[in-house]
Image (tube, rainbow, N blue to C red; front, top):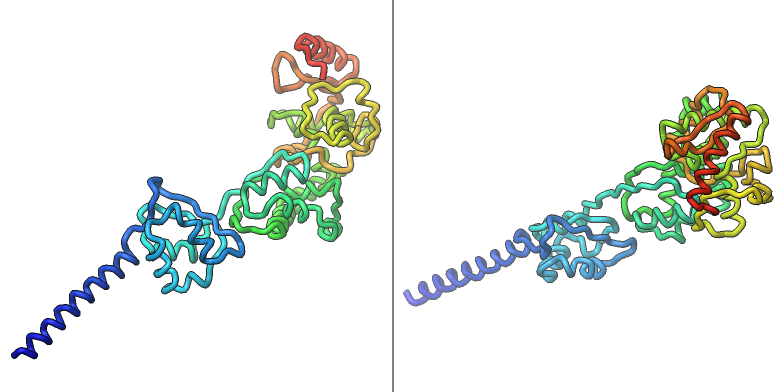
Length: 347
């Protein structure tokens, strides 16, 4: 009888211990273990990170790191950390946290446009993916890559078509560049290449002209008309006489791309630079900025008209007055010069 009571007591104690252990295990796995008020928080795990890096990243967001570590070890995550961008939701338990970090790498929307130089592009992209600006710029300027794709330092910007793209945050510089080459080839489909051939330009030349159109007008609906002016000049063997190319030439010569130039002076037109289209008939050796798709398509589908000149319209800001003759253009230009002098804009 006494032995039976002992056995019963042992069983009861065992059940209690098992219950306590089970409760602890349940809490460790299935109870909420987040410690933030927002609906979600984002965690970035860098390439090459170990489990301690993960712990350090989670420290401000997780209540009990010890229980999280236990679950992570049991599920084999501690030895198989994966880089990426992970969205953690408030109320997640350890099981959910580990599953998210193990297979929930979420992509980011990478957006860029209107960059003047590869340096600017590298800086813009580095704020959106893991690769830093130095790595990106080295990748963009890789001599072997440029040569293999018929590019050089002057026109390498051509490769990057402005748009919104989806990438994983832990994308490397080389992976980003390779994706952009794929997107470039996709953009220059058979239809666009055929249009470029019909207007007598290569895709590279189209982008160069489009960059000038981009700088001339911010009005998308006016771009085909502006492109028509430049194509009229180009087809007739004229110099393009484009102010934005002179501004770019000044910036390139001084090395100061942050300077703001609102007015081109007559002395600027004498600047000896292949970008100065007042001095040379040839198209510039590359784009003076990254043109939007709307500017590229504006060149490919330029408006067929008889205009050869245009100047800013001071009665309709943002747009331009177009002219067929130099005499008409000079009258329009006088109105603009009077306005700009009145504003006190000297440079």
